[in-house]
Length: 364
Ligand code: KG4
Ligand code: ZN
Image (cartoon, rainbow, N blue to C red; front, side):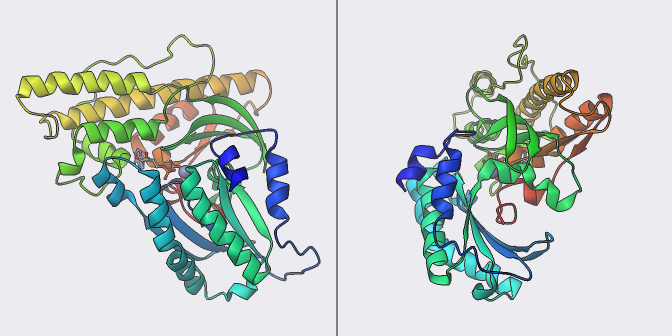
């Protein structure tokens, strides 16, 4: 727990190997031979309690997930202690469901893999202590998993992708561009200087009170924005994409959120409504925010592609860009990235939307 708290939220930390070695030392039995390797994956880094059983060829044998989205929508954001309690309430059932669906006896598992970072310390702690108890009982090896590495490598479950490839990870907690040179060999090219795009969308959706919109009441903020944006005018108001002149691959989303908030306040005055009611122009605002966010993401990714090609870090033709994380399940963002990859002779690969958001399969 002490190690987790110290390392949570840190990506590419040099002491990573030490942490991994420490965790791998739990009940590791190097002499054990398995005919078919079968891994149980457990994910509790944020607000999804998820588990899956996957075999060594990538077959998903069983899967279960409990999403906390509806609870957190009501409290207006993730309260870590609430998330922790919900993980505690559900983890046993979810792991049991994944195992039952797989028809695998726990004793036939080859290993247990669990997200150890980055994420909310209280949430991560539930998955980790549950897993360590299980590896102790079953005497199985433990595989500590980096949540963002799992997002980045999920594509290898559905597509044959050779290293190196460029990965864009855009979620509620993270935003980064990295060159993936091997299973745990990542070169970080850019990251968000403030909040992640999913966090920005969640905040805008909350400010727009989309939970009160009949079509979006159970959707995550990002999903609600995507849904409403289809009915809106993306040129409703003009926002300049951030970091226009920054000669790097970093991102920023706080400015976009603040400008949008001001716009919402102005519209509320014009429409004579209070904060907490849904604006008649909510769909236009959703479309504009989604469009500006997509433009920003594409511009920064374009810089990363040019940088990698200039330095021969990626092949000149048919280089692969993988987009993953919750925000990569957004079809407007995917379409924008596709226009970029077509123009730069690259190939865009995205896991199916249900594998973009957090799940147990990517951990297993
Ligand atoms: O990867 P994920 O499930 O959890 C994190 O690791 O953060 O991503 C969740 C984030 C949330 O912020 C959610 O609003 C956003 O992904 N999201 C979307 C969509 N579906 C989920 N954002 C844009 N469009 C979507 N369709
Ligand atoms: Zn995630």
